[in-house]
Image (cartoon, rainbow, N blue to C red; front, side, top):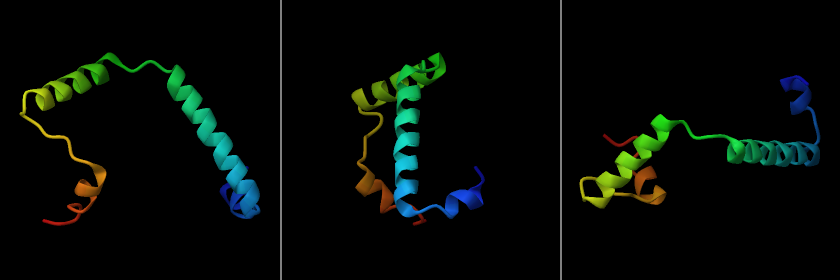
Length: 69
């Protein structure tokens, strides 16, 4: 199916397709193995937060700073 064909579909059909795609992606993600380098990076970041070298921010705080310099 081409992009133009998808654009021509009724909204209800597009929403069903989106739901199916998200469910499939979620299932694939849940079955996939996280690469060791990603695990290591996450562990390093957690440690920096734990020791106070870094701080977690919620999305609302962060998005307000995007584009400001």
